[in-house]
Image 1 (cartoon, rainbow over the protein chains, first blue to last red):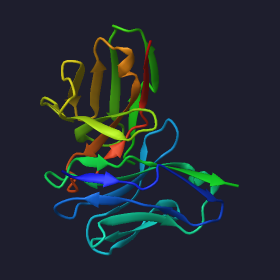
Image 2 (image 1 turned 180 degrees about the horizontal axis):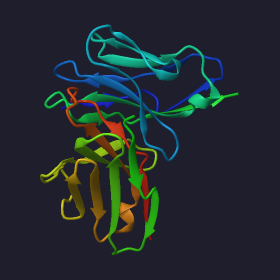
Image 3 (image 1 turned 120 degrees about the horizontal axis):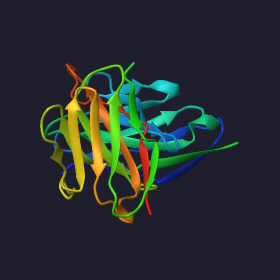
Amino acid sequence: AQSVTQLGSHVSVSEGALVLLRCNYSSSVPPYLFWYVQYPNQGLQLLLKYTTGATLVKGINGFEAEFKKSETSFHLTKPSAHMSDAAEYFCAVSDVTSYDKVIFGPGTSLSVIP
Amino acid sequence: GAVVSQHPSWVICKSGTSVKIECRSLDFQATTMFWYRQFPKQSLMLMATSNEGSKATYEQGVEKDKFLINHASLTLSTLTVTSAHPEDSSFYICSARPKGGVKLYEQYFGPGTRLTVT
């Protein structure tokens, strides 16, 4: 069965510091990969996605992620954290049996310290 | 573009009553809508997939008689929690896939509905 793991349920960084949120997946074939952000009491917003092609993908708000097949990873990074980046981040993968469902990881709560 | 709304944004109901949550795609038609449930500090769990004009497909462990889903039009899906109990209190989020979209993974999320059952 497919699964998504996110190392660290809570990450704290200083404002201006590098943001690194880790995501690993297990799947029999490479899935599509996504990062979503959720602000308190709101729905999800797509940050970026990988489907095919270039393994380094850039998203909104200065975030990017790199798909590493050999490591089955899709870590999210941002060079310099802003206070507004404080939110819950979910890594997700497409269900490879149908590709229409999305399986979410447990989430990582990001705090940005002034 | 690609805006999904949910109504109400929050609702409080008494145990034993039923509550309906609406999910609307405002600027596109959606052949498929998904309903998720999110407990505090937890991830989203897919409850069911609804396709316009047909019965919803429920995930394993989700009671179809308790969580009634109707997808009567290409812009509206409803989730009715019947005979709600405190353990049904949760954040319910819908998402919608555009009609004619070639990307199966493409879906847009609503803002969520906070349900509290007292």
